[in-house]
Length: 276
Image 1 (cartoon, one colour):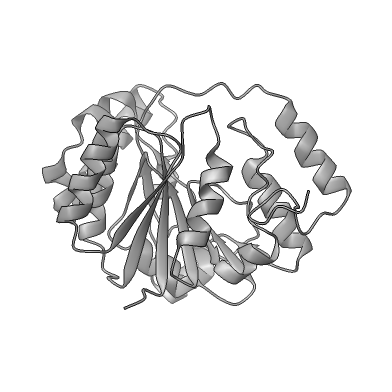
Image 2 (tube, rainbow, N blue to C red; image 1 turned 90 degrees about the vertical axis):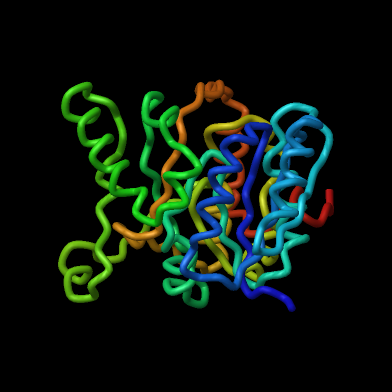
């Protein structure tokens, strides 16, 4: 049976992170989803571990892989979009643990011609090392994380973005404290209709450096195509595991982004379908 929702997880090695994500997916309140692993060239040890995770999972999952030739996330994401069977796609990164209500809240917030733009809570190095499968399997694991993050935020001045841990589901309170606002896409937490992504031809595959532009470019083209970006603050919570930062200083991405933006590009010829 075809699942109406596809969760696309972009990964590169780090099977220990993915084990935590799969544990969090097992306790999702919304169950009708498939998982598509968009693998940017992980090694054989990762693939063996992933095969084991998929064999044990209670949800359907598939693995989309290409050879490791450097950072080519946009290319493998486009392949994952094509492979996805759902008509609504949710995107996270392979270092982000979803709250038990994560998929449900993305699904409940979806509307025609709209992208849901979430944000992330940043776990510190210390807290990331302390997260275990047993903790994740407890549906209240986020409560312990809150107090640990609050302590490190106050006493160690860590940049944890703890504000994104606050959750407001009551409609009356949301109308007061969490009004919908236009927000840009953050690649580790957003969702969109597959048909809208196909209209703009997915991600521009000329972006071959991480950090800036690859998400913004998709955001800009969707806007030019009449799709609205909406941020439901205090919902759709994910927890970003600590890892060493990638080099984000490449100016090539900025040039591509500005070129597409200046030309008001709505459909990239360098995306899912190649016309150049």
